[in-house]
Amino acid sequence: MADILITGGVLIPVDPQRRILQDGAVAIAGDRILAVGPTAEVVAAHDAPTRIDARGKAVLPGLIDGHAHAGHGLIKTMGGGRSDLWYKACESAYTVGSTPEFWHAEAQLAALERLRFGVTTGVSLLGGGDSVMRTDDPAYGNAHCGGVEAVGTRSVVAIGPTRPPHPRTYADWSGGERRDKAVDYDRQMQTCESLIARWHGSYGGRLHMALLTPTLRPEHRESMPAAELREAERQAREVHALAVARGLVFTQDGHGRGSVKMAHELGILGPETLLSHATDLTDEEIGLCAETGARIAHNPSAVASILGRCPVPELLEAGVLVCLGSDATAPDRSADMFRHMQQCMHYHRTHFRDPSWLPPGKVLEMCTIDAARALGLDSEIGSLEPGKKADVILVDLRRPHLYPANMPEFRVTYFANGNDVHTVLVDGRVVLADRRAITVDEDAILDAAQRSTEEMVDRLGLRDLLRTPATFWNHVRATDQVREH
Image (tube, rainbow, N blue to C red; front, side, top):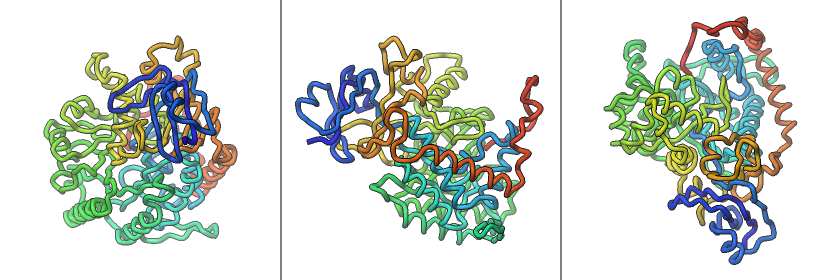
């Protein structure tokens, strides 16, 4: 006996056979998929008290965002296109300007955005850049994880120490007054241990923790004092070893310009390693990723992909596993993985001046089954197969930009957007129906996000960053200052 039957949809399960069923069905029992196949066969074999009519809709596995940042959802477009100002706002907000309420409000806003766009699983680094993590106290990570859990999506929360030198200044605003504190590496690691113990595998496995360390690049060998560099290298090896021992994903942000070779020299590349951005890799570094099994999170819509190029086709041809990431909901991006699939195809086809690169099925794999493999979760999610978790999305095909009704596998990747997502199930539970979240009060989440942002802006005196810059109109170029993040 099933609990839910989804019937009559165009089924794109991303299963090993890569079937496409024009009239397909999914039977769900509890939090697992019971059967997948033609509607007539599934309905003949299973009955259920709840039926979801998927006629006129595509039925797919929930999408997966392989790299994003918690906190960014409340920073959004601050700085008006000036990347240096935007990054400065992130850095101050994530260390001295945020409260647990900020992290809870942002977590709910970002999770709601993902949910509305059919992203059922996402990676979230607890901070910004590759080093500004809010790991001075477990209260902030607790607030984030609790916020995500309430929305009902699946999340991999990455935590870790900041780059030396330590201690680093953080601020506590409990009671309404700022109290600065010096936080060292050991304290940050204690925070990580606490969050792993509390949250990893919680809520039926919907919440996972990952570990990260700041990315070391060749320029750090020139800019960092020798003792400081040695300490950074020691910390990277220690955090990586802890991730391996605990069976966690180990991730690093902002790879490029020789950093992958340095990571290999440190001994931190392996199948548990997920490297984001990975721009301007050498042939040697591509080979090192293939040799060690290191995975890549490609963020085609990120600023880093403007300043450099992630060689995705070359990585794939070398046998490297590559997934797609949004790089979070700011400064000029969203959590819409349909947008990032389309950007990915255009990005690499433009590079080669050849539209044959990265067919749409490949990019769909990159944010479903390949992303699940990159996170070590492919036995549970990433495709619609019996025994896997019932993370399912229904995309409304009865839309002008998706008609006429033919070749649906092309239409959902080339033309769909997140607002076409009609229904979402996570763990066999309906969490979005008729484009509305049914687990939380959307208006309450929006109001809390607005309130937390206003409080943070006033706390840090950042009101000027919310003004429309003079370069918004009648300029060919907005700024001469660009900074990778």
